[in-house]
Length: 125
Image 1 (cartoon, one colour):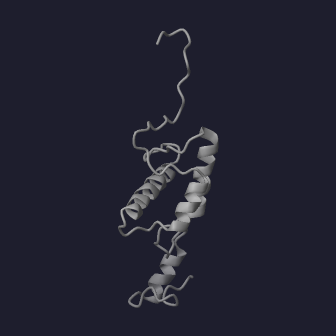
Image 2 (cartoon, one colour):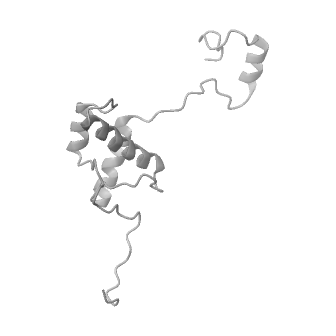
């Protein structure tokens, strides 16, 4: 909206200031961060899984940092749910995540590197 007063955002701002702010190219009244849906991140996870053959996405995944954070958050919320603690994870989401092979734990497993190393047959092991 071009008039934040109509949206109930401000009562103390003058119409002149509203007009001036609206005239600034690229100015946005909405300061809320843009949220990415569960379904979108799930799609990114599935794509990673299909391409890499595993779901061990590191928390600080350089190619897609938000996906790494999302995977970490899903693991954390799942662990809270399993402990019977307050969690944002629902049983429905657990089923959805399980259906795509989501790795809820990475304990005891090495997280694959982001780029596979080339094998060198000439090098003795």
